[in-house]
Amino acid sequence: MPPPDDVIKNYLISLGFSVDNASYNKMQGTLKSLSDNVAEKTSGMAKNYVAASAMIVSALASVVTATADLLDKISQADLG
Image (tube, rainbow, N blue to C red; front, side):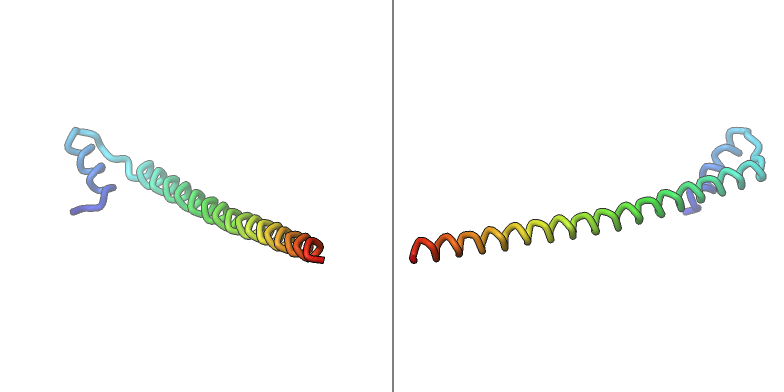
């Protein structure tokens, strides 16, 4: 099966359109640039989400540790 670009190009030619290769190549370059830009931004966003989730997990672990220490102190005071 031909690549999607060729399918569209062949379809347009079959409808009687002439393909302006310079404009077609410019459009392809623009689409590639857009695709690369989206991939770069999503990668950056993923890194930010990983960092944020690590900070949240760390904060929750601190809260759990502090709560456990508090409960231990309360139980020791109750026994004492």
